[in-house]
Image (cartoon, rainbow, N blue to C red; front, side, top):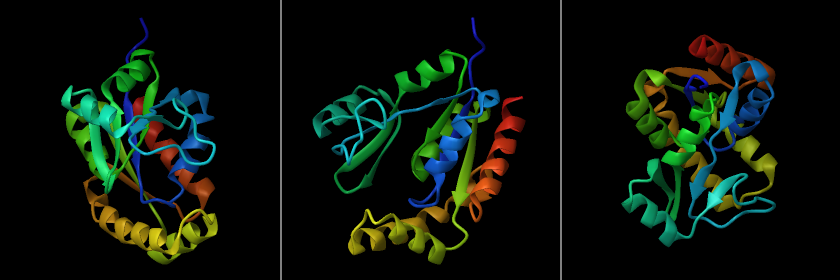
Length: 190
């Protein structure tokens, strides 16, 4: 039987480059990464597909799974919109011998770290500054002015939790941030 994988949790404010970093890490076979697909109560955006970017659940289905204790962590990230990680998703990836990489919000990350302790590594990706973050969010051209303002306010709040993470990495330059995160993960899984 394959040795059970470990859990790597990445968290960051929206627009910090976390998804891009994870994408590059996933291309490194030596890390043996498996990706955790989160569940959400929001509808798909753009070309998102169920079971690929997220498991899209109705708000009722999401609540039923909360009641049945089927989430490792979940959070109402924006009013009426919940995100979470299903227990069976963690078991599916780590049970196959892969190291599970989780892309989750700050509070969820801290909950998973508490639950799995030494078997989990929490990494917080920081923007070089809030000004740079705002510029990146505007550059995506996917959000309204109101949404950008909310994301910046949320980013300030999320950054205040960064000292509670095992490691912090600043994404000022993508290749360096990817290298830093890779080295941290390599040290953890060996």
